[in-house]
Length: 488
Image 1 (cartoon, rainbow, N blue to C red):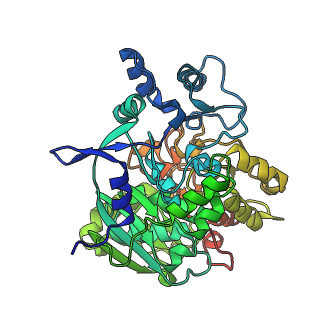
Image 2: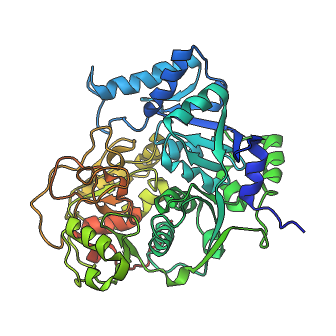
Image 3: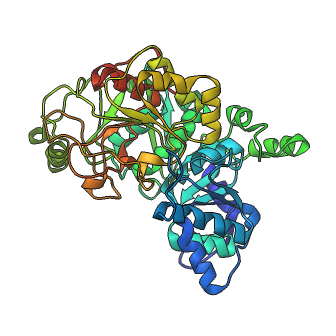
C-alpha cells in the first residue's frame, strides 16, 4: 500500500505541468513577486521582445533599494533602480507597490499582509527569504535571475523536487523563547546545512501554538539552515488571520476556498525522507554570532573553547577570532554596539508592540534604528504611539524597506572601534565577504568594529522584544535573560 502523501507532495503534484526524463518538473507559478533586483529578468524579456506572460499574477514591490530616510538622491543608482522597477511595471501592466504607496513594504511582509499569499499557492521571488510565505500553507521558494526571466515569460519554472523533512516541536515554550528560538535551535542542532536539499514541514503542538507572525518568522529562517523551503499546514489560526485581507477571496469564494484549504494536510503516517523531533520546553533563549547561523548557544552558556571542540575546532576558532571573543567567558553580559529592529523576519505589528513594551519609559544605552516591515505596519504603529516609544527611548524610527539586512539602500553599519575582546562584532554572511557582514541580536543587528559598512543579513538572531532589551541594557546580560514576556 502506498503511504499517504505529505502536504508538500500534494502541492507539488497540483502544480506539476510535466515531468522531464532527468527528473525535473515544470511547475505552474501562482504568484511571482519581483523587486528592484529583478531588472535582469525584464532585460532578458526586452532583448527577445517578449511580454510578461501573466501580468495579473506578477506583483512588483520596491523594497531592497528603498531609502528608509527621505527620498533617493536624483540621478543616484538607487533612484535609477527604483525608477526602473516602476517603468517595467508600467510597461507590462503589473500591479506596483512603489514609493508613496500606502501598501509598500518588504515583499515578504506585504505578500501575506495583503492576502496575496494564500494556502496552496506556489509563490516565487528572486530572494531567498521567499520561504517566509510557507507559513500560510503556500509552497514558496527563492529563485535566481535566469529563473526570474523564465517565470516572467512563461509563468512556469523548472525545478528538481526536494526531499521531504518533518520538523516537529512539541511541548510548551518557556519564557523569552519564541519562533526565532525554535529556528535557531534546530539550525544549531542540525547545522547550517542541516536542511540542505529538503522541503521542511513544521509540525507539533508548539508549532500550532504559534501566531501566524511566529510561523512567518520560523519559515523565513528555514533557508538559514540550508532548506529549500519551509511549510506549515493551514489551520483555523491561518484562516482567521487571512480572512478579510485585501486580496483574499471574500463571501462565497472564501467559504469555498477555506474548505478546500483544509484538505491537503500531511497525515501522521505520511512518508517523509527525514523526521526530527525536538522538545520545545528544553529550548532556552539563544543568541548567535561567529561566522555561521549554526554558531548559536543558549544565553546561559559559555563561549566555546576550540581546543575542546573536536571536529568543529577550526570553525569555532575562526568565529571567535572574527568576533573578538574569548573562550570560556560567559555569553551573558557581552557588550553590544548597535541594534537593528527590521527585516522580513519579524517587524510586523506584534513584534513592534513587544519591543515597545520593553522600552516604554526607558532610555537605550546603545544606538539603533527601527524599520517597520511595511507602510501599513508603520501607520498602525504610529496610530498606537509605538513610534514615540522608540524615539523617546533614543532609537531612530525610519521608513519601511530591507534596510540594514541587505544594505543595498545605503543603510550600513558605520565603522566601529578597534578590535577588543568580548565585543559583539561583524559577522560573516554566507553570501558575502566578512567585511560586508555584521553581527547582532536577531532583529537586533550589532555594529561591527572594523571595515566600512556592514550587511546585517546574518543579524537575525533574537526577537524584536529581545532586541529592545539588548538595546536598553547595552549588552546581552539584560537583553537575553529569560523574562515573563513571550515572543511571537
